[in-house]
Amino acid sequence: MNILALDCAVTRISLAVKTDSKFISATYDIGMRQSEILVPSIDELLKKAELKPSELNATALTIGPGSFTGLRLGISALKAIELAYNVPVYGISSLEAYAYPYKNLGFTVLSCIDANKDKFYARLSDGSNILLKDDDYEIEKITEAVKDLDTVFVCGPDATKLCEKLQTVFADIKFLMPEVPAQTAEALILMTEELIEKKAEPLKDFDGPVYLRASEAELKLNGTIS
Image 1 (spheres, rainbow, N blue to C red):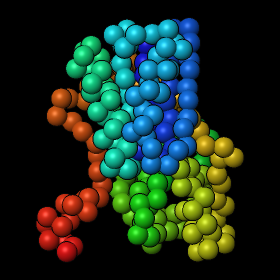
Image 2 (image 1 turned 120 degrees about the horizontal axis):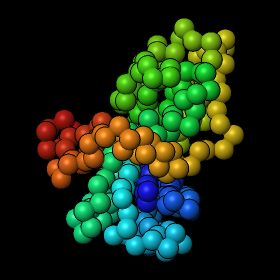
Image 3 (image 1 turned 180 degrees about the vertical axis):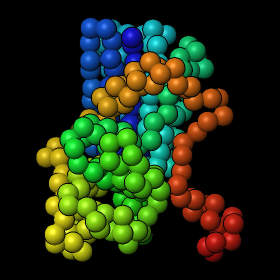
Image 4 (image 1 turned 135 degrees about the vertical axis):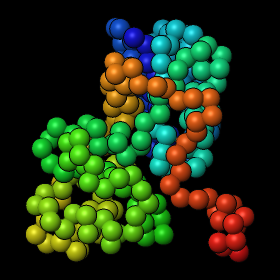
């Protein structure tokens, strides 16, 4: 099966292509320049895999939470492939994808993205049990969720920042982190294969990124901010 996956939820973007005989991945940590390199990077990965877009069986991406711009870029790129070649697109929670490589470690896993304004997009899971669903949380809500745990494995793009905050609150909880961030697109490939095996529905035409926080423009339109 030929699958293309990408994670554009944060500034560090991850891409991967899997065929029956090849597995090629790339990561770019280039700040806010995703729009300059995303499409050329997809083209380059497909070229290395000796694969045409029309030969893809499925594509997948992190659908949120994350950067407004990055999520829109990712879904636009894969929707273009879908429209041109009828290739289904699977959307996967960014926070679930970050936690996926560590799901069998035996620890409670806290995946996170810095949401700024002293908040984090976070998800807390113990195996298949979701203890704290994907949402936009103040640090107090996260500390309340982990206060009775002995060990927490923290992952995601901003694990270090969240760990530092939690360690100032809890001296008796062990917070672990990966030495090197996992390649998210590789996890997305595996997750997509599982979704296909379960006959899960891909994204529909009208489906888009999942935003857990309103944009500044929406807040101004609603009169929340001036």
